Amino acid sequence: MSKVAVVTDSNSGVTQSQAKTLGLYVVPMPFNIGEKTYFEDIDLSQEQFYNMLGEGTDIYTSQPSPEHIMDLWDGLLKEYDEIIHIPMSSGLSGSCDTARILAEDYDGRVQVVNNQRISVTQRQSALDALALAGEGYSAVKIREILERDKYESSIYIMVDTLKYLKKGGRITPAAAALGTLLKLKPVLQIQGGKLDAFAKARTVKQARSMMIEAMKQDFEKRIGHSVKGEKCALYIAHTQNQALAEDFREEIKKDFPEHDIYIAPLSLSVACHIGPGALAIASSKILPELDK
Image (cartoon, one colour):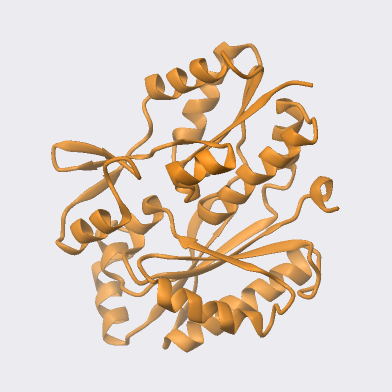
């Protein structure tokens, strides 16, 4: 049986300390701030990030360098036979395509997964890969399984402010001004790897109800299981909004009473574009191979 290492990046929300406990390897995502490059969870904490964001500092996301990726792989392949590398969605960053190109020089020993995940759903993919490796699956087979179910996940995000969507050019200044005047709470979605508009709510309560209803429909139609089943996992993600996230969990449990709901901070790469105060609900299908 091959010994398989599982690598993901910090967009998964897995911290360096958690990675050591779980047996994962996490590539810290770089952020360009002023003249300096910072690395998530290395010399850029969540608190530092939001402080700088609140001060109006320009923060730009970047890709891990090819040298950093290859150095990690080369080191791991001294101990492991194969590597599964799970980067953030190719629809949100070029880091996935870069990793796939780099992997071509590793004679199949490095398998890069392109399964359109980010944040808590990316974390779940890394945990699934670990479990599959523990069951004896090869790196190629693990990649095939994760990519087979790549569309069996969804994320809905309520944005608290339009400031950062405007700054990033995702909405026009006029739309931002009108939305702010009307106190709109946009709900965005990530399905198939891209961040898109989903709905507009007038209140936080309405936005939360919209997200829960959308998730119920995903369970029943797209993912193909009833809300009462245990065939899907549920998560909450947030941007500097832990208290509201915990309150949201209690609301969600009214419709999904049989589910444990994991809460985690939303990826800083997404937070750059939506700012603090955001709240998200996410789900991913439990792999049949692990549904025991």
